[in-house]
Image (cartoon, rainbow, N blue to C red; front, side, top):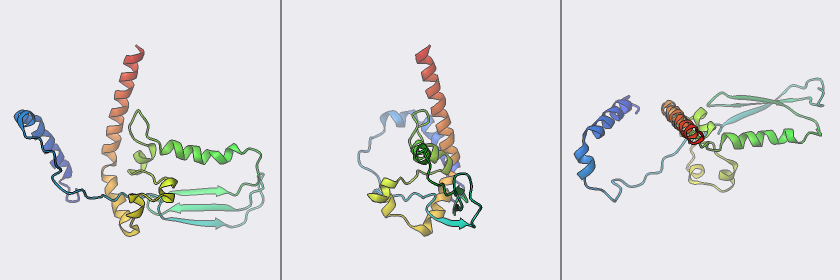
Length: 178
């Protein structure tokens, strides 16, 4: 992939598989894996943040006075939020959790999470931090950026496959309702 041969090899392999009908029907079936299992590390977007409190502002309607600004180093994503005072509308505090659940849940129509279609990797959910998975235990901050850049090479293909699955799902639903 790094040498630029990946897509050419992928196309050539697909063509060879399509043309060799005898190999597909009469070839021997291998029951053991050819190679030992090797764990693959996946990148973590949002693993390194910088958070700062911006200067004091005049009090706003919600009694907010300060602004917190956070930036994620790899994607350069910025989030700014005022410090809300006590509010009677508790549902406002639940919106980030509902949004997080929506973004990290695989959708049936695409087979992917919205988060993975944007950032080319799955999000690390809080449960993985509390009960460490292999992904959390094998995390290396130095190699994270290079792994995320490699994941970006496959992002367009993932989006195309998700669009194909979504179109197929829409056709099946239309056929069912008609």
